Length: 263
Image (tube, rainbow, N blue to C red; front, side, top):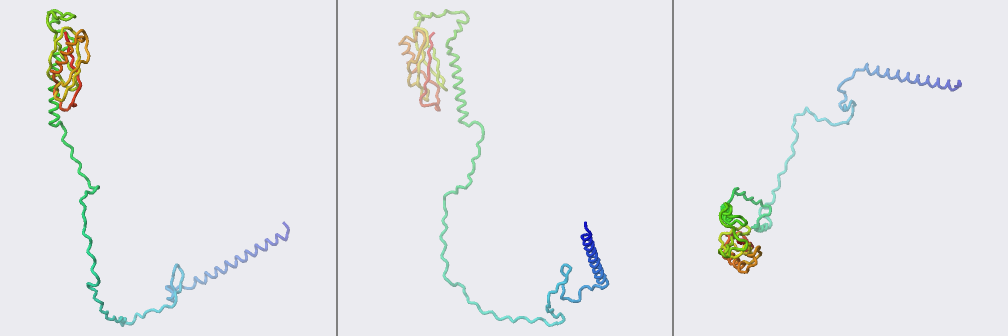
């Protein structure tokens, strides 16, 4: 660095130091002068207000004289002018229309829910249960009497004479023991047809609600007896004379079968 630049820097630094010293000296003199002078509060000039640490002058406002004891003058009230009587003035209002009520129930009306009935079988159900029980007992009695394909008690004990496979025309006519097939019904009465040969004949019947057979026809058969027209006619006639248990809840007509087995 050359000597000229160095001299300029030195002179600038000295100038700054001198100015700073003068400012500090003036500040100290000001603070000393304000500290010696006593401060009076509140200020003598009442037109100044202290707001946020500063005195603000709000102007000359005339202050009321509080020493006067005379009451303030009251304003004289003028008498009110009489108003016009408007009672029953104008035309009367029209009468309102009569209220019309509707008898239609509101859709939002809450309907009472029916109370649940007492649990347990009703009288009708008890009667139906008793009827079914009796029919079942009657069916068991019939099944105990009619045993297709079984042997007699005498054959089981070894007594008696076994039948001939070609029939016993010489000994007498064979009797057809009936067995029924009808949904929900039992055979309550029947007739036993006769034949001269062994086998089985099945008759198709139509039965009404009262249990009466209203029609019968040959359906199928097995053994020699099935080929005998007289035996088939005899079975159809015996089926018409038979009857089933009554069922008022059954269809008007039911299809069933009565089988006659000749042994």
